[in-house]
Image 1 (cartoon, rainbow, N blue to C red):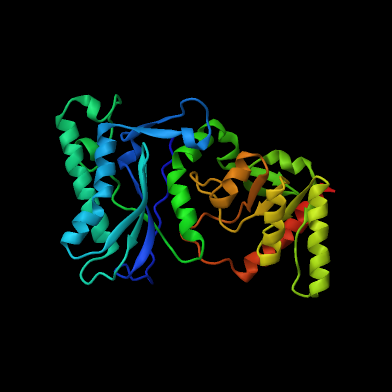
Image 2 (tube, rainbow, N blue to C red):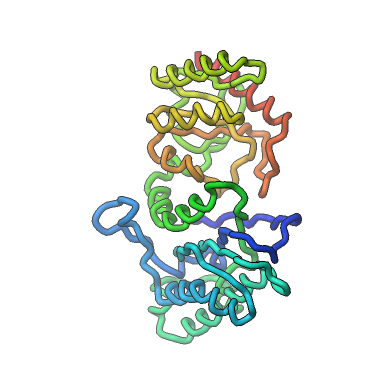
Length: 331
């Protein structure tokens, strides 16, 4: 399975020397599955799915754990809050506890890659079981001794509650990959689905399009009493086996979505960023997608943009209009 993510452009407005927490993702050169093998002994509950690391994968894990030690030698105060080495990539949550005077996040990542490349050269010079029984076809690995792709991806901690989600994502990554492999139909983009005469790309349970539909659009003109009554009506419709359709932009619309998903109901969400070949149902929607409760739709004319900025007013209006259109078509 090729699960290579797109590398995102780093934030030009962020100071990468300041005190901060990052979720880092680094991908193996050419996405070669050289670091481990996914296993699920017993059953497929999240606590039982794990990566069985190759010796090289174990060396990489040791290099991540050593980041605070080598950082302290250069006067840096660093902490690893979570880490996970996968077969084709790695994740870790890095806490830069104090501002760095002469270095940046990029320097730390370069240092990690240097240590991992040393482990790679050792593995290539050793018996083949250090890198697993596989056919290496990557020129970067074999000839340049470069274990990882040149770039890396970072997510900057900005919101309350985000740290817990970062750590959970890292720890549950083997389980999430196992689920994606065994439920491919609900976790890969489907292209060119026609609804009401328009084309959409989709991720999730397309069978939800067979349900009756209810639009969720809490309008700014609603009074507090009208808003409460409208939200209650949306929840009642979901309980009557309607699929709720909306971009779920406002806090009130999100609240309706959260209640209905937790109760086991169905949601069709329109999104403002096109799907790349590697886009999947991410974040808090992952478990609901696995249960078949979620369908994500993006209008075919919206391209995929790395690090897309905040949704624009024009996009909000367009997505709400499309949601209304999709509901009318379902009647």
